[in-house]
Amino acid sequence: MQTETIRIGTRGSPLALAQAEETRARLMAAHGLPEDAFQIVVMTTSGDRIQDRPLSEVGGKGLFTKEIEDALTGGRIDMAVHSSKDMPTRLPDGLELAAFLPREDPRDAFVGRVAETIAGLPIGAIVGSSSLRRQALIRRMRPDIEVVSFRGNVQTRLRKLDEGQVHGTMLAAAGLRRLGMERVVTELMPLEAFPPAPGQGAICIEARIGDARIGQLLAPIRHVETGLALACERAFLAVLDGSCRTPIAGHARLDGNRLAFHGMVLTPDGRQCHETTIDGDAGEAELLGRLAGGRLRDQAGPQFFESWT
Image (cartoon, rainbow, N blue to C red; front, top):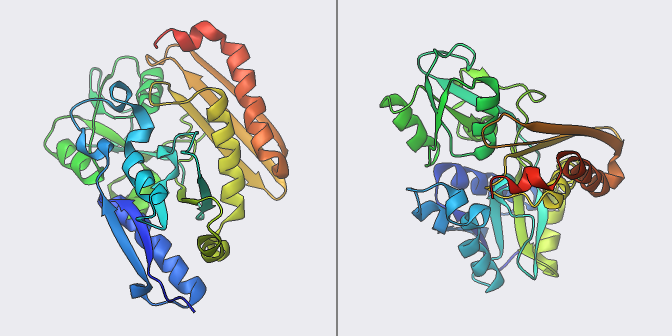
């Protein structure tokens, strides 16, 4: 019988809270526990505080996790719930990604006001996005479009869109679905032509390595298929030293015991692009991701990766 309150750390945005609440609901159902067996601990991260500059200029993905991971390492929380695409490939010593929940739709969603699709935008239209990957892919599709940096949570970006600051914006379809806001989507981008960020659409739960109590608690809600797909995608990203400074896309699909992966790397202006596909046994997901990353690194050459650093 659970007697000690489980503390779940999370950022405070509506989407982050929805993800933490989904995790709590799954744990309650799996163990027959009441809601008050869990405490959602809301934390503000550096990424939340810094809104006036692109992440690539101030430290990248780790800005959304550092304070929460410090609390986890220090024992002030028992687990942390994150968007997998926000997670650096290297975690602090003593921490691990202990579970993944079933993946939502991994696609990017376009929300347009003057046109429903990117192809339908007028010449010179302005699209806002904080993701270098999305910016590069948009420029690859429509070099005539002006792409501007667009920080803030989902609600903030949609408000800026409604104010007319831009003609359209890109958001993760998964986040909109989790918020019950999928009605705002005007175009879902195809996975092959507009591949997502590694980890997009998947909620991960970070815990201390060797914490048997939390490990047993998480065991029934681990989604094996999502874990395998993410092992491949994160291995791919790690080989390419992926950060918020590099436009990298990657998506793994499982079909029974087989895994198929598609990866892409672009220059920020979208003019140069290298991509690869690989498939194999799902049990070798991490190896497949490393092989795909190595292929792209060799194919593109070191100057490709050094040209904008």
